[in-house]
Image 1 (cartoon, rainbow, N blue to C red):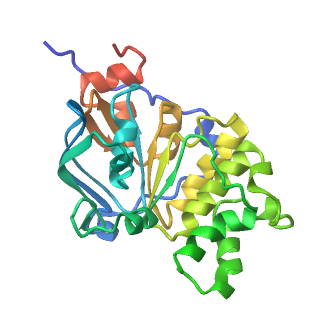
Image 2 (image 1 turned 90 degrees about the vertical axis):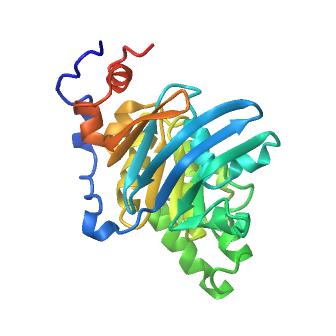
Amino acid sequence: MSATVRPRAPFFTGPRATLTPRPPAATAGQRGSPAVDVRDFDFFYGSQQVLKHLSFTIERKSVTAIIGPSGCGKSTFLRSINRLNDLIPSARYQGDILVEGSSVYAPSTDVVGLRQRVGMVFQRPNPFPRSIFDNVAYGPGLNRLVPKRDLPDLVERCLRQAALWDEVKDRLDEPGTGLSGGQQQRLCIARALGNQPELLLMDEPCSALDPIATQKVEELIFELKREYTIIIVTHNMQQAARVSDYTGFFDRGELIEFDGTERIFTTPAHERTEAYITGRFG
């Protein structure tokens, strides 16, 4: 017989007080249709099924954390949204994912355009071997999102959004690779914002950063959700508790539980969720 899940103290409380207060998630009246609608989605690498019957929605202008053990399908799910998994020859899917009401797997979907609409930040900072300015300006310039004369204003706005402008405004012509690790990751965030995305995906964005740089990125996430929908994959449950409005727990390719973050970390409905967040998993 399954054990009863008992209410307990919040999983993580200490460092949250050191961060900027979290802006509220959009209310039901503000949300309308979801930013992401996952519909009975399965994903396979050859004969191996790595995602199983995923069905849930992600609200606009909120931060959703995806947690779970290594190999549970978190990053595969994230890369399914912008179809980066298409680059793997054996990959195939069933079901669908809608971003702002449009199927990302429809035959008419422009995959290049999709990846412009769905920005992504990876585990390790990967700035282009170009100047700081060009790192941000390259995408919108290539895609002609703004007139060339407006690129300097766009670069400044994105660097400000990434909380990096004051640190680099006097050296925009210097290589982006010369920045510190934390600055490089914020540059990569600014680069993603330059394409004016509707959705921002973050795959373990702080895993290669020190605690100070991690805090800056987390504070940045708080600010960005005022304008963007953010999905973050993280192994760090403290980070999920600090930054997210909603949390989904994945295990062996299945979505075990999805709810508000406070509920997930204080009174989870599923025994497997409680076992994972309390360190008794497996």
